[in-house]
Image 1: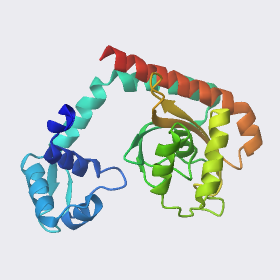
Image 2: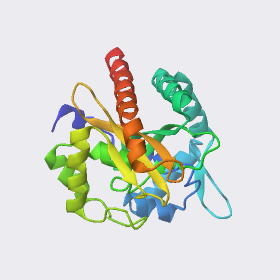
Image 3: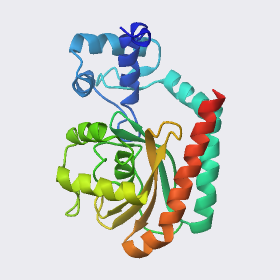
Length: 262
């Protein structure tokens, strides 16, 4: 057994995974839902949830028995945000591009095949859309997803793509594995991904990957989001492919700098 695995706490892992289930789209959950989502038996789920409730990281509704994030989770989140120089620098870079173009920009990081939104700016007086706080099953239908997939080795790519549920959100959504792999090849060659009404009707996005510049490992992605009534895909690609790649590179540099300082 590797030393790092020998000292790995599976109990702590499960507790943190329970807390990570809650976001702006999932405000509360029953213990049955938590058990199903994490593939835990009900006895273990009850023990973990009860511990988190006692410690005030979760709070339980006495009538419905649903649980939601408690006061300690909120305090922890606030402290993390306040202490994150990394997030402050990312916001600065995104805001500079936002001020130049007045476009909606999403930055998201990869966690267990899902995207967690790190920062977002929404264009003024325009019709557009941005990623939810947690985007699940979105690797095949978003430009951030395709951009992230383009960073993976062939073995890892096939493994991750094999877990995708190819559900169609629109008539343009890619629902075929081979077609997605061809799209990933194209994304690798040009350094950015395009999605034209694949996630939502009327939505066009262009995205580039965030990577560890030392290892090449994908960390997430950044996207520019537009309504189809504002710009056509060809115009958007011609105008914004350079800036999106540049922004992704700048954010990746920030992430590298923070890693080195640690």
